[in-house]
Length: 338
Image (cartoon, rainbow, N blue to C red; front, top):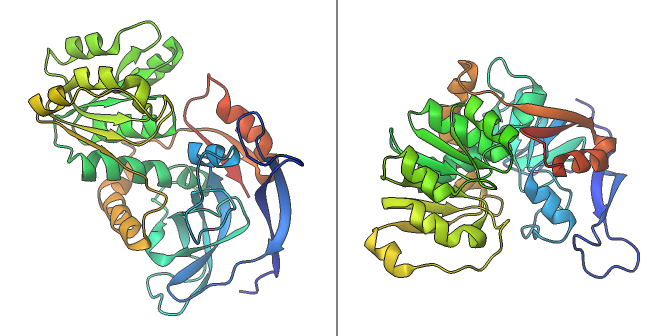
């Protein structure tokens, strides 16, 4: 395959005179031309057809998420497309294979290079847009709920942000694997959406989610908490946690510092941990993705989990896509088409 020398990509360009990115001074979103990346040993080059938008991308734009050392500053953590070239030593993939990939960055572009360990086949019956919207969320849920928190069939799983990309994926995966998902959301419409997917829904604006969990679980509490809020919910999460429960923090939308009753943590013999997926090594990501391919991809093929793509935008419309991503009524994933 003959490759073009240059490609289009999205970059975050700080506004003139701005020394530090913030919500008040986010970087400008620019479509630029630059060289197509070169493939090294153990890597593949993907011709991108679609790229998912995630909260980490939005945070990167405002200086709230540092790019891992050695990674490109082009945003984008998940893509789908076809293999355009393979590096030395790569035997599992061939040119023109339909693939999706988990990235450390670089997805908002026409081409992206990634370690071959971080590549998966597109699940049967899904197109590129659907595949691009599930890799990062499925990997996040698998890593945190199933690998870290050691999910068991029948577990009651509290999922904060239950109508967002990770939340809707978590609800579906927990339900499909025999668990009881309980989702918090900030509006009745989002609660209804979570319930439609199979969760017990709680409107955290109008209900005390600790009291509701006590009711839903007959006083047992949540065996697992998948937490994107952190500080704001620290005391309530500890109260909601079951004896022997596992509380996994994967986001800090409610702040980075909060009180924790360590005596209650010890009395409940609970586990509190936190994870970031993006900076993990290719081998670590490869291990996570193997579990996703073996255990979760068949659920997409069987129709037990839906990608739930909310809307698509062209790469040149990334700014508009970010505006839609931030709107409070959004549910599901936003995907860029390339």
